Amino acid sequence: MPQPVPHREPFGRTPDGRPVDLWRLESASGVSAEILTYGGVLHRLSVPDTAGRSRSVVLSLPDVPAYAARSPYFGALVGRFANRIAGGRFSIDGRPYRVPANDHGHALHGGPEGFHSRLWQAEPAGDRAEVELSLLSPDGDMGFPGALSVRARYALDEAGTLSVTFEALCDRPTVVNLTNHAYFNLGGAGSGDVLGHLVEVDGDEFLPVAPDAIPFGPPQAVAGTPFDLTRARPVGEALAVEDQQVKNAGGFDHCWVLRPAAEPGALRPAARLSDPVSGRALEVWTTEPGLQVYTANQLDGTLADADGHHHPRHGGICLETQHLPDSPNRPEYPSTVLRPGERFTSRTEFRFPHLPTAPA
Image (cartoon, rainbow, N blue to C red; front, side, top):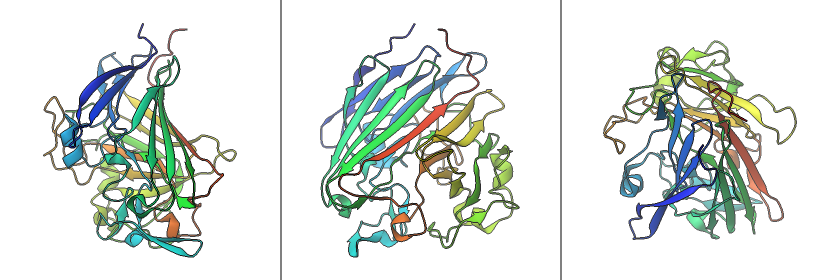
C-alpha cells in the first residue's frame, strides 16, 4: 500500500543555480503524481489503463533547463493572468496598466516571466498525499498592480482523483486568473497524437477569436459548428471540419463558456476525455466559468521527454479551467478583479472513472 505522505527528492537547479525539488504523491488506486517546484509543473501523472498498466498521461520534458528554455507551459501553473490580455493593456478603476507582450502583441499567461517560470516554495499538507506550493508576486510584477500571495495545492485521494486548488490575496486591486496547463494524452507519452481521443465539453457556447486569438465578439452557440462537443466526438473528426475558426488556430485554441454551476462556487462538470485504445478516461470538474481547449497545434515533434518520446503535433490536449480570456477588458464577462479583503479561490478535479473503486 503506498504511503499517503508526499515524498520529496532533488530535481536539478534553475538556470540561476537554485535547487528544484520534485514531490511525489501516490494513492491506493495506482495513480501517482509528480510535481516540480519550478513552475509548479505537473511533471508526471501516472494512471493505470484497463489492464492495469500504468503510464504518465501528461506531456513532460526531461529536466529543468528544458522547462526553462523550451516548454510550451507543459503542466505549469500559469498566472498572474492565464490566457490572453489584448495588447497587454487593461484598466482598474480608471487607472491603466500594461503587461509585456509575449504573444503576437498580446500578454499571454502573465507575460514572459509569468508564474510558469518561478520557483515556488513547497511543503507537505499534513499527513495526506497533498503538497502546497506558495508564491509571492510583488507589486508591479510583470506590470500587474499590488502584491499577490498565491497558494496552490495538489492533492491526490485514494480514488485517484487529482485536485488543484488555488487561493490568492492582494493588497491592491488587481486581476487574477490561474490555471494548470497540463497537456493530456491518455494513451501515454510515445503513443502518438490524440486525434482518436473522444472529447466532450459541458458548454453550449464558445468564444470566437480573431487570427491573433483574441475574442472579437459575444459567445457563439456551438450548435452546427465543429465546437459542438456536447456529445463525445473524436478530436480528429472535429478538427477536420472546414471552419475558419479551426483554420485560424490550426485546431482548437478556444474558450468554451461552461454551463452554470448548481450554486455559486460549486464544482461543475467541464469536460470528459477518453482513449478507446487504452481504455483510460478523464473527467474534469471545476468551479471556474470557462474551459480553454488547446489541441497542441504548435508542437512539431522536436520536444521530447526523459525517455526520448517525442511530442508530435496534436500530441496532447489542454483542458484549462479558468475565467474567460481578455476579461479585464470585457465588462460583460465574469470579473477577474480581486480587491484587498477578498480571497480568490478556484478548484479543479481530474477524475479517472475507469479505475476500480479503491479498497476501503
